[in-house]
Length: 234
Image 1 (tube, rainbow, N blue to C red):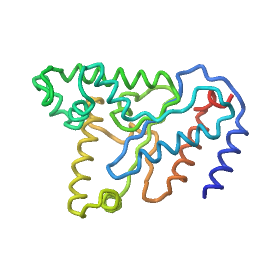
Image 2: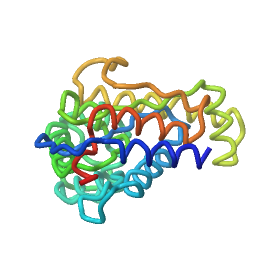
Image 3: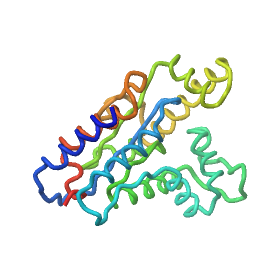
Image 4: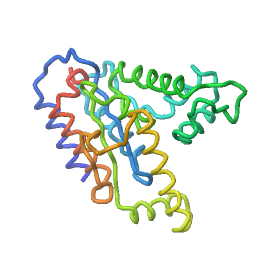
């Protein structure tokens, strides 16, 4: 499978007609159901894009994840753990009259949303980034040269994966799936301002039916079809 993927990517890169892209730099976002290997897929995608680039010149593709929380926390003068707590608390954790549990500083939900939005848009403006979660799909909806992906899988498959990963029993894993799915949906809806639907995403990928390499190959193919890496293969 690795050889097939490598041959496919090499062929696609070197068959590509070199054209300039004057639009905003390319961005890929991953939204995921709990238990789907989003970080592994995102990192493999970044490694693959950089490996098959024709040039050693920048820009290089980057995987952005914890950097979003760290930058937002810095701007709000909070600790990353505080920022993560608030985001995971969903709408309940971001109401106007909430006093942050870990801090004496009052931060309104509007300020938090604006800060996260500004940070994500800032990373996106640099281009050549792959982001996981943090409401990035909602914040960047409609942006040019952006691919919003949703990783999904049957509940039972995700429960088995979480049991293996965290060494916990099925009951605990099932509770985690229910809780984390609800929190992640709530976060997306917080930035959307309305109920999430699947039309937000360009593609849904069933992680239970394909290997990591196959998933990356599909994503790469869609990016190639959309001319998303013209700038990085000069």
